[in-house]
Length: 172
Image 1: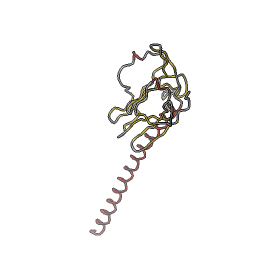
Image 2 (image 1 turned 45 degrees about the vertical axis):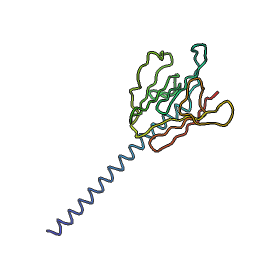
Image 3 (image 1 turned 135 degrees about the horizontal axis):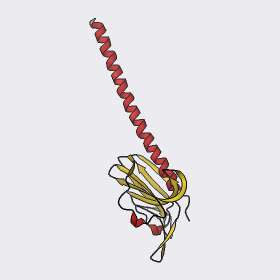
Image 4 (image 1 turned 90 degrees about the horizontal axis):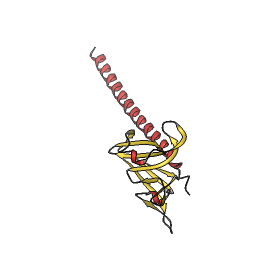
């Protein structure tokens, strides 16, 4: 009876270790799936960023701007309904949250206040950088991209330990 009790105790501890490993593996796969879905969305929207021009103060601007923690551009791909009308896409890093908002182009920018409130994921680190060219010379990295700079050559997105380089298709 004692021998059987020892065998059962060892068997249950082995099952317990196996179940814990299974749970950790499932959590890791779920986290990778979420990150992969976010990367696909950002890559699809960003690669097709449209060089939408608008006038302000006698200057012509293209709505594409960003910093290491914020990205704003025009795209015709929506998280809500796929390809369609052009809309303004915003991504903002707020603490560990990666926030998203899309707004129809005809809505005045002054009507939109605050950060986006739709979370597309929680990551330990998210950052953007931009590759562009100066008037003369090779392409260089920029930590900030302004509306009057046009569309960058490419955008680097760091999500946790992954680095995603997105070449811009609609540059002019």
